[in-house]
Length: 211
Ligand SMILES: *[C@@H]1O[C@H](CO)[C@@H](O)[C@H](O)[C@H]1NC(C)=O
Ligand SMILES: *[C@@H]1O[C@H](CO)[C@@H](O)[C@H](O)[C@H]1NC(C)=O
Ligand SMILES: *[C@@H]1O[C@H](CO)[C@@H](O)[C@H](O)[C@H]1NC(C)=O
Ligand SMILES: *[C@@H]1O[C@H](CO)[C@@H](O)[C@H](O)[C@H]1NC(C)=O
Image 1 (tube, rainbow, N blue to C red):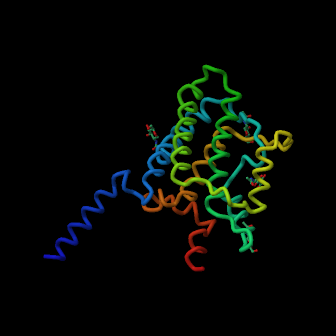
Image 2: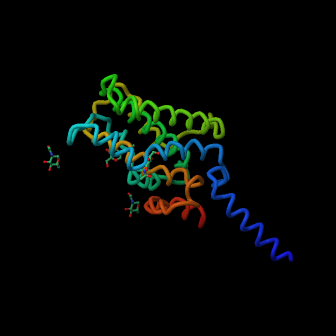
């Protein structure tokens, strides 16, 4: 009897957890984050960030606004006991760089361009919603001193005299944002799809668990 109840319960939990609200321990940030992710799916990225632009069209961004998995693993590599890089440091950078990327594209688009009206304006709001929720549930620690490697990136990102520019395709900005997301917010994604692998390069969880 008890066994049956257990099985029933497990079945029920399994079922409930298919619903978007239950896929993680932190549903309050996961729901708005997944809304962002849905808007970054490959169909929409291709339509609005590639097909709506001339072939090989590029825009200018600062070097630091390209924030890939490789960058993250390099930063984690610089992490040490005196100056540990925390997931939160990378999440904050991701949030800033993703939104900055959207701004860079918006800045070159005419008022009535379909990518602006039908896509990026909305995406901008979705990111803002997520950010509000994220900061509400994970307020910044005012005491925290950032590791030098992270602080240097912030200094360059916010330096209005930064002269380092790089040409990138508009779609690649969102591709990067999309690819790094499940890795940085593992608690929202690890149970679901196979996107899990994106994180392999980082070995972030592994290190934490074994030490
Ligand atoms: C992406 O989202 C759009 C709108 O919700 C949907 O029509 C499309 O099928 C989705 N594409 C993929 C690959 O999931
Ligand atoms: C676009 O870029 C690719 C790769 O750099 C190049 O092979 C191709 O000829 C370019 N297409 C146009 C229309 O400029
Ligand atoms: C990521 O790496 C590229 C070069 O591989 C570099 O130009 C860029 O500044 C790095 N981004 C960050 C945020 O460190
Ligand atoms: C991280 O450091 C290790 C050892 O110092 C090195 O072998 C590895 O290539 C580094 N990885 C990156 C992404 O810099």
